[in-house]
Image (cartoon, rainbow, N blue to C red; front, side):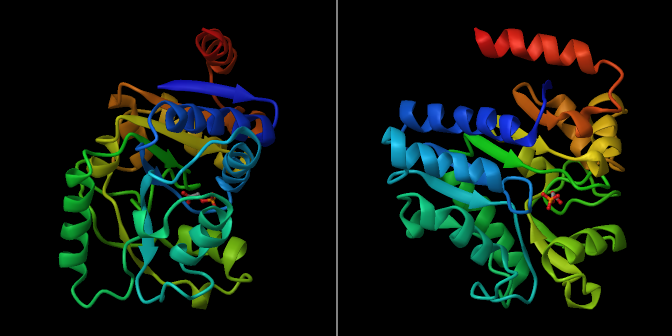
Length: 259
Ligand code: PGA
């Protein structure tokens, strides 16, 4: 796991976006795994800037998102499909038909999840998977206690995730946050060829510590990334604050990024 410690989230977002724009320039048919939440928004803005100013094109890019709430229509303002349309897809030249988000209204959720796995496989797998991390160490909606080999399925949100998401996206009203979601599994995520995880702010410091320097455990599903050969973690100073080897990671990653 390569940990990149930046002074600010703006700097971290730019660096992370540069990995994606470089990949899309090199291979216009790049397959992206995308994430929602407050964390990737600045990175998505930077990707959109590169489309406007550097001529990067997403016309042939295909994307699969990590998760979606059960029970929310794609047009619901808190749905992850709506979030992606507003925060990224409308700002770049991607063909909406090439973007995929699990259907939270699927009548047969198990069939929806199995079909999603097949689509990703048929696309040749995900080239770059974008991730945030929950304050409880989750990736996608893989909460503590989820098998590290899990596949896309119906999952159940912990009270702490409901609280975090209510604060950020539901006007603080916990009762409005769905308690179930469809989510890519940890095993699904770890099959991506490259992983780019972003973590900002002091409320992520414990999760980042667990992910990078804790043991590999289903109680911090992000720790599964320790087994991945090409996983990059972009943190601001606050999120990296509890890492014992913070300065070493910062030096090592700066050296590798300069190569
Ligand atoms: P956040 O969520 O970006 O809104 O903090 C991250 C996550 O739960 O994965």
